[in-house]
Length: 185
Image 1 (spheres, helix red, strand yellow):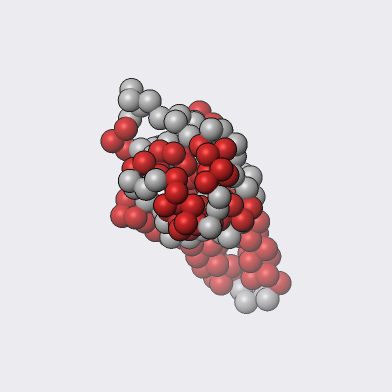
Image 2 (cartoon, one colour):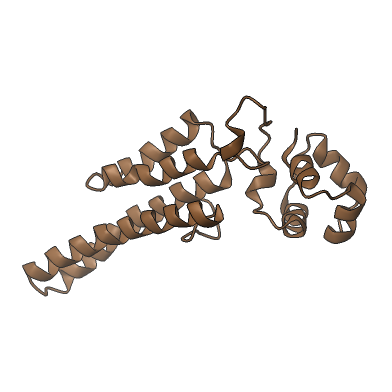
């Protein structure tokens, strides 16, 4: 079942009601529910009307009863897997490229190619780029070895905090606390 139809039916809204609420034509909604992927303004308007993330409407994976339905929402997001993907960079804090590669591999292995998984990886990519820049700025300030050591520890702890805060938010509200307004993948 296409994500739009699943969410719409879960919220007990007819196509006509969704059309009125989103200002998108019923015909466009019918096309999306039959397999066309929504884009741009249509995607934003439908997501806003349904009060969900835009990425939830981009997924085309069907939900079957045999899947772990208790941990999934109508768009096929398995939050247990999302938490594993989010927590996986903790194991590779010392080797920054792996804090991107491992969640990326898990995203494909666990079939969680959704906006949450992409956002998790995008946040790790930004952190991986920013961490050495901040470290190099700290070295150029020439404030001593103790400052450099403290800076290194703070950089690593910042990523630990981001990961743990996102994990808590996934548990509570099924979304990310630290997220970007764009996706890098």
